[in-house]
Length: 328
Image 1 (cartoon, rainbow, N blue to C red):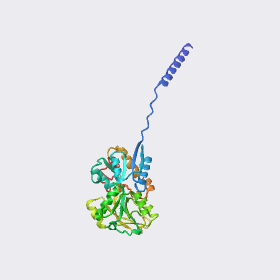
Image 2: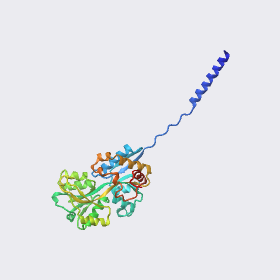
Image 3: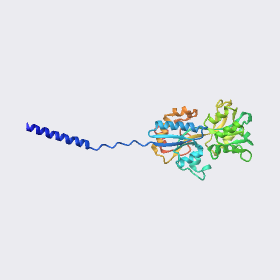
Image 4: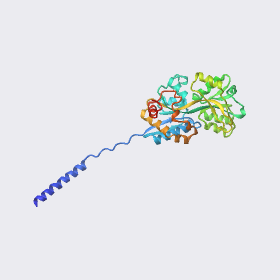
């Protein structure tokens, strides 16, 4: 009996020590959650196309790119955006492909401030040069702008560069015409108030700023004829010839011939490859989010993502396109 009691006592003591040992075993340190990466997309003014498209991109990225939160903000558009990308004030930006080329190569408005680290993510849709006037002004073609009050875009903007190139091709400049530097909203307000005769708006169509004018005035779009397009192409290979379809705006009853550049998304070379890869993937694999935000997003396709790419691609975007078989 004493033997059995002794055995039970030893077992009890052993179990007691085992329990203590288990209690004293250090607990595993919980793995901290991966830190969310926040990125900014600089767009344009609220009256243009960049802002709604950029906002939809931010939504798609935040919802579908793992660990990335994107925010779209208004800005002064192409030229400002190129500089913000170069200075890493923003991780991504929407801008014209011609402006991206100027920035990367340090020419035109970037001749004293080259943006060598700007990289391409995707080209998106045509940015159509819309020379907007009122029907009552009876301005039919670009030659009719000579001597008139013409707004060419915000100072230093891509729109202003395009406008001056197009006007110069027609023999129009500040020596023979009242040139004014106004942004899209200012152009819209000035046409409604009849304080200008015409204004340049470069954006995907339909553009809110133009629709806003057409809601209260009969608008017309000024034609850019073939010979002006051919002159432009000699020096500026980014221009393409397009038609603005009849019915795009109230009062535009016939197709109007004009020219266009391309909108694109750009980033900084120093951004991590995986971040840009996930951003590119989210945009192209959830295009429905973009299309719900603006009609122009229907032109954003994987098949045309490299058309007119005017600067080197970021490795993250390149990785995605290789996966999809667009590049080797």
